[in-house]
Length: 67
Image 1: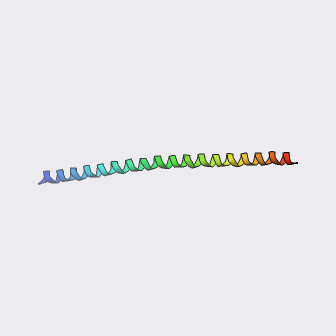
Image 2 (image 1 turned 120 degrees about the vertical axis):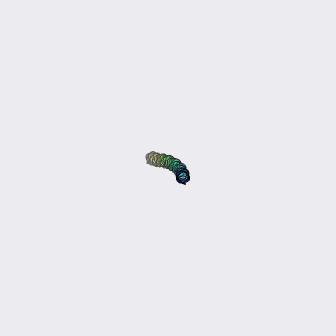
């Protein structure tokens, strides 16, 4: 009977190890996605800032031409 319990425990342990590995893979994938999204947001904010600067520069140039 002791062998059966050991086999059952090993099976359960192996199943838990497999679940743990799957969860770690999911966590790593989510972390990678979060990093990618952070970079995307950072780039978009930078582009938005540059666009506002460009609009401001063009408005100044237009005002100079009009005066």
